[in-house]
Structure formats: structure tokens, C-alpha cells
Length: 318
Image (cartoon, rainbow, N blue to C red; front, top):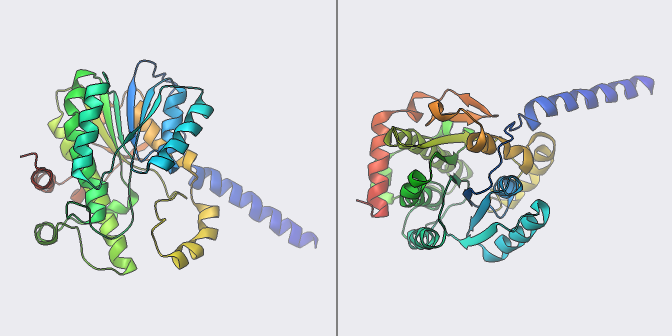
């Protein structure tokens, strides 16, 4: 029995060390206050987006919860107001799967809000299907919706600078590719319905986030706007709520032990949004609150330029 208890104790201590180093991860150390600043956080009714919005509200920012589901957003709004003690938190409807909705959101925002200091493109989806504009769902929501939103709000960001754009990507971008032939024929980053196909398309959309950030930084050179992409960690959130239920059931015990919670998952987003002195790193990719190198495909100038041009065409910005 004594040997068993000793082994059990060693396992517990070992897991605690592992959790603190590899699971919990780094913490945003910035003490910046944001009184008088305005922030948009997409997909902020749940998960890391909600925790990001809560932190920013606690720092005094006026926080716009840009979300699709009104009921869930209003519940999040009440939670954030209560926990932050701030009344400067507002819900505005935004469906990133609808270019019309993105344009309506931007128009309303620009008419009703004087400032924009931080745009945090956090929302993401993991499911197959098509948007109302005929784009692949993950391509349309994870990339195109945010691409259009960012472009429509860039002038306001420039007016209020120094300001930042933060794009929540994923480590999965390492497994992605951008097939322009597939985009041309299907308006999608891949085809197929198997679990592997869906995972690959998701990774492809996350590569778009990193490549978009790379190109955006080049186009923002000599302005007072900077941008960053990031991997938030492997998070136990609702991103996969549309995934296969049997798969999610099998994943649950693993996620409880080895995945970050939403607070830990928001830390790299907050670091990119708030940490002083990051301006020379505009366009870079972060993980665990640290800048990371990316594969050549994620910083390919020709691919980045072409993705931008294709995205402009699909959004009707040309």
C-alpha cells in the first residue's frame, strides 16, 4: 500500500508540474489600462473570446461583443458586466458567414462608435457546409468574414492609432495548404466529408489567418496599425460543438487533463493585444505569449499576395 501511495503521489506531482509548464502555459504580464479605448472581439459570447472580452473590460475598455447568436451574446454580456463591474460592454450582431451582415456591422459600428483601438478576430468554426454567399463554411467564417471586417474598419484603426489587429489562428496552420484551384472551382479550401477532410479544411483556414496577417503587416507598413496572429493553445472550448458526438465523448477525458481552459487560452491573445513594444514584430505569429518561427508556406509573399487578391474578389472589394 505504501508503495502504491508513493507512486500515486509521484504521478500527481508529475502531472501538476506538466500541467503548469505545458498545459497552463504563459500568462499575459501587461498591466496596461484601457480607459477611453474601444475594442471589438468577434465570437466573444463563449470560450477564449469571452475571457478575452472580460479581461479587456476589467482594464476599462469599451468592449463590443461581435457575435452571431443574440441569446448567447446577451447572456455573455450580462456575465461580463457583472464580473468586470463595467457598463462599457455592448453587444452588436455579426454573422461572419454573411458578407451582408459583416458590411451591416461595420456600417453600424462606424456610425455609432467614435474609436477603434483593438480589433480581435477571435471567432472560429469547425464544421462543413456553405455560407449564404456560397463559400465553404470554414473558409467563409474563419478567413473571409474577418478579412472583410478588417478591411472595412482599417481607416478607423488608422485614425485612432497606435492600434492593433489580432488574428486568432492555430497550430493547425502547420498542416494546412492553400489550393487556389480548389478555391476557384469550389470557393472552398478542400472537399470531402470525412473527419480527416474536415480537419484538413480547418487547418487550411487557419493557414489563411497566418498568411493574411503576414500580408496585412506589409500593407500597414509606415502606418500606426500593427497586426499579429497566434496559436491560443489546445483549448477545451465549444469550437468543436458541431463535431461528431462520439468523437467528442472520447476526447472529453483527454481534454480535461491536457487542454487549456478558456482563461489560459486567452493569454496569448491578450499578450498580442496589450504587450508594450511588439510593434517591430508586426505580422509575426505567437504561441504561449512568445513570437515563433513559421514554415515558409506561412510567410510566402507570392501566396500571401494572391490570397489577398482572391479574398478581395470574393468580398467584392475590388
